[in-house]
Image 1 (cartoon, rainbow, N blue to C red):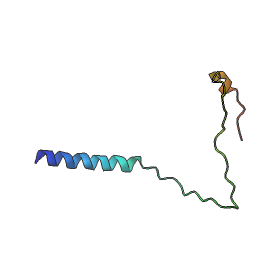
Image 2 (spheres, helix red, strand yellow):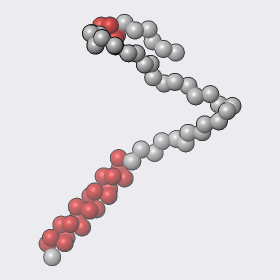
Image 3 (cartoon, rainbow, N blue to C red):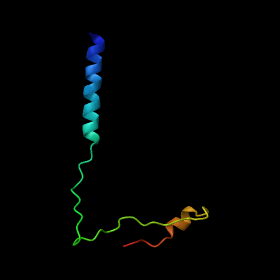
Length: 62
């Protein structure tokens, strides 16, 4: 009886936590009349020698 009760409590906690962590993002509509704006700046460090200062000195993208 205690094991069943404990399992029910754990299942309830799992369901509550998963609902709390669910991201309710806005709907994304993609169409020909609405261009997609890039939100990230991509930069490749091909030799792998970039320092933190190199990254911080990159120009900010608009």
